[in-house]
Length: 233
Image 1: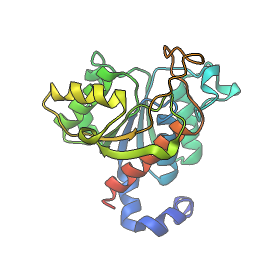
Image 2: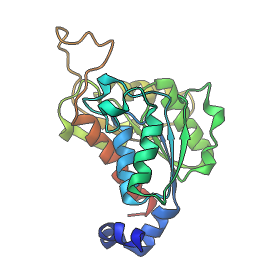
Image 3: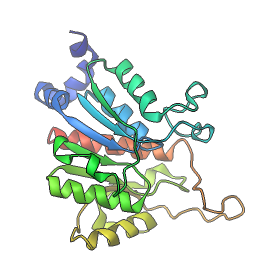
């Protein structure tokens, strides 16, 4: 009864069949920082029944400007632990599987992608992104990947596209080139056409600049695409 009431407003849009599909779905989110944290937040509030969250980072004070799990009270804690506690506070019926590891080609064997209904890539490394796409393709599971959100100021310039049609984004270019070596030419992505800020007086680009409004928007766009794909909207 509580679950029916909690998701009643969502059910008005997705219908009973759609909600049952979400309750049964298992989604893996690789990377739960600025973008991935908001993906997880939206999926938990929409009723995804099983969430795998993968990240080995702890909350730091520099995360406070943009990450949903970053609070002064959570500094030093593992992001996946903070996320699990918050997810279960939102939806106690959600099954949350925590993986304290960074996804890289070297750790890829730890994950069976066939267990997932959807895979979400919100990590930063090119090699990791390529590996996620490769393993998703091999497992026949849907995947969406976030491209660069750092050093951007305009959240209205995000687009959902295939990686073959992206432009401007340096990260998309690097991933696109890497995927071609594996014979992969298509990948659903969220990316921005906004040029990377070039103010070297403020940022030497060894660490990307960030804000509260760009990564969060990217994450919410990704979550909406996942939900729509899962229910065949």
